[in-house]
Image (cartoon, rainbow, N blue to C red; front, top):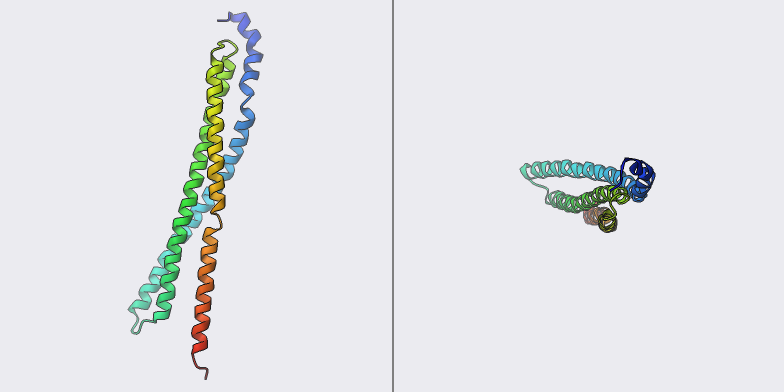
Length: 185
């Protein structure tokens, strides 16, 4: 253990030793901000899907309650409703991946902060190096998991749009085929 004078002399070394993980902490904080914004926009889109699903359900009920239900319109509305349910499911999966990414990034920050504290303590307590190293490696492993989750989310980002594009193409084609079959006056 160091006496008071020796501790004051070692203080600059304590501070320098604790700063090593700060660069990674700053990078994680910046990524966390970006993913929080991304999650917020996905949640907003999920709420939009729910409103669209309710509107489609109301349209289906109106068609079903009509005197002679238009089966083509009913079929189209049901397909749109099913597609919205699928989009909701896929988008919710993306939101969960982003949530996991955020949890890992925040965990990384926490582990690196504690690692930084242990690094500083190692100047006056040499055994703290071991704890600092373990926490740093654990933080880096958690960061790697966060990157993996972010990659998984990125790979699925176009799924919803592609699904919607396929549906619109199919519905447009079927609508054109129906119009071609109808005699013109």
